[in-house]
Image 1: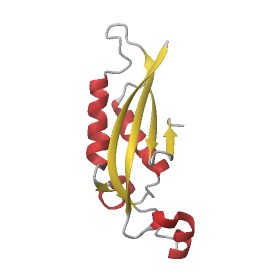
Image 2: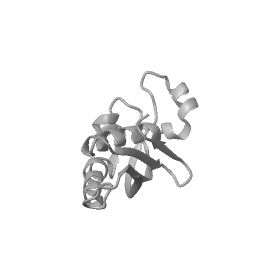
Image 3: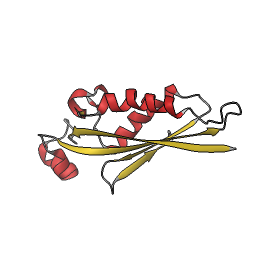
Image 4: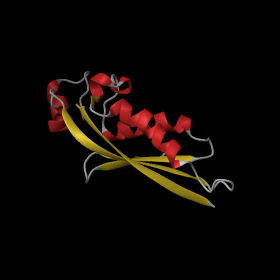
Length: 136
């Protein structure tokens, strides 16, 4: 039997969507107001879901206290109140779209979990816009 457990988290961050290899007109056409050279911010909501078998000894899929600490260290401390483009190494050369942020979060959390556990990241950039990534 496989069960999915989830933990919610939150962080605030600024970013700018643009490609330095494109001219301003193309960046504006593709990214619109998200291309603001002075950046803009979001109140991101994150759901980290872990799926696996229930451990017979503990009754857990994963210890939620451990998952909480991983999220705090790998995501909240790394991203909260940061300018993603300027202060987060992963985005110095990677456009910080919601899709790319979800993949980066997945790659930061996955190595801390047991290999047999599946991970899915759901990232809300706004209450209406969100992405999911599960490593595929």
